[in-house]
Structures are given as C-alpha cells and as structure tokens.
Image 1 (cartoon, rainbow, N blue to C red):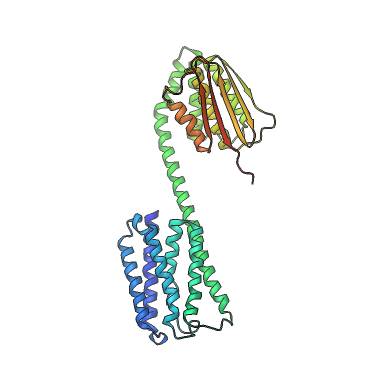
Image 2: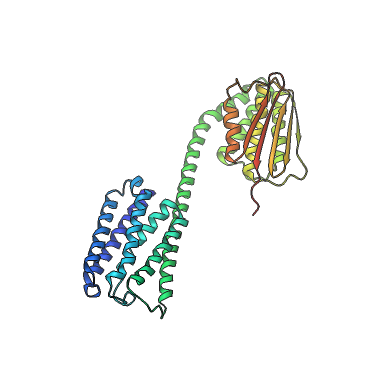
Length: 363
C-alpha cells in the first residue's frame, strides 16, 4: 500500500510542478523578479526529480529530513510570491506562484508524522501566505482579503489532517486484512495437525481426565481459530471459576475463587487477559507445584488486583529460569493490557502470582 501511495504522490507532485511552470511561463508580465520565480521553479524541479528517483525507497522519501526540506521549499514558494509580484498587488496580479505544489509537503508530513502534524504544517503554510503580503508591502486587508488568507490556512490544515487520517485508516485496514489472512493460514495448519491429534487422544485415551482435557483443549482451540467463541459478555468472576473448574478436573485439587460482589464490568480484552494468565498460573501450580489447594483472590482499587496463591512445593525464583508459561502466557498477556506480574515463592512454601491491571478510563 505504501508504495502505491508514494507512486500516486509522485504523479501528483509532477502535475503540481508543471502547473507552477505554466504560471511562470505564461505570466511574465505579472512578475517583477522573474529570476526569483525561475529559481524557485528550478529548486522545486530538483526536489521533484530526486523524489521521483527515490520513490521506490520509502525510507528515503519519507525520512523526516526529506519532509522538512519539502515543507521549507513549499513555504518559500508561498512567502516569496510576495517578492515576485508587483508591490501591493499580490492579491490581484495574476495566478499565485505556489497554489498547489506545497500540498505535496503537507501530504508527506501527514504520512510520516500523522494527521495532527499535517494540520500544524498546514497552518504554518497558511502563515506563509500572510508573510507574502508583508513582503509585497500590502497595507489594505479589506474586501475579504483577511478571509482569503484564513481560508488558505484552513484549506491546507484540513488537507494535511484529512490525508493523514485516511492514511492511518488504510494502514489499519491493511494490517487487519494481513492478520486475518495469517490467522486463516494458521487455522488451516493447526486443523490438519493439532486439532486432529487432540481428537485422536480424546477418542483413544483410557484415562477419563486426559480424555476430558483433550476435549476441552480441542473446543477452546476451535473457538479461537474459527470464531465460534463470540462476545458472550462473560464477567471476570465467571471466567475465573471456569479456570478453577478446569484445574480441579485436571489435577484433582481444590480452588477457591474470591471475587467482590461490586466488581465492575471489565472490557472483554481484560477479562481474556486476566483469565488466561490465571489459567496458566493454575496449570503451573498443578503441574509443577503439585498443589492441592489454590486461592484466587480479586480486588479492585483504582486497578484490578488478582492473586493466585497455592500450597505447592514452591521454588527459588533467583535460581529458576522462567518457563514459557510464565514468561509468555502470563507476563505476555499482562504486557498486552499494560499490566504487571509479581511472583513470590520459596521451596516448600508454595507460590503466589500477583497480577495488576489498570482500569480503563471511563468514557
């Protein structure tokens, strides 16, 4: 997408420069410093030519220095138009030297720095229009001339903001399409391998607990891959109790889930992150800690605090390398929602995993 946008921007830049060339060629009588107009034309041509040669190298043409140079050239064309025109006639003498070309700098700025920066650059270019009147010794700003200058600034600002916003939307759409395609490919791969293996284990396992675990894992994986799990609005308490039930069925221990009655409704992303992290902590407690009793405690006080404390055999965090479950399934999930993780454990004294997640701002 980026290359296509740059290709189109390159064509627009050439068309804008050709218009400047036509203005210089066909309105010499409206200029008092033709040499200055020609110089601006040559400088803008040189930049346009170099930009076109580099159009297939986004790291060059979209470098902040390149964008700054283009904005300076556009601003110079707008401001120095007051020196090119006869004194006091910048509003009435012929076509402006830089009516279109500066827009290309605005578009580049909005691509690189975002819509807000594009709008600010537009206001700055609008100010250069006023500077051109100062250089042209204009003293009369009546007959709507102030409104004309303000309209120029507003037009440039809106152009920069609008293009930057649309470009961000296009980027987001492209990323979503790419993510959907990647997910579909992963789904096909896992369907042909992992899901079939889980189904085979479920049918042939002689241990009921193992068969039940394989069935649950198959169902959860299918829900994740194929979208069967819709937004059910499940609250955090229900999600944690479901994790507790899975622990008890798999490892035979007991889990006590303590959730306050006034727990606010949390966004689905936070519920999934917390329940996923708690589920992994429970799995570690049963698999590695051989815990028989676990307490899951939730509290809310400016943030969501969740503790998973077990009576397992514990470990020494200073000498134990974190496994994938803790580093990715727990810390990774918390990092995705700007949360933190703390682990307290000692040999023979069990383990406590504490999760903290900031509450989302109310709208």
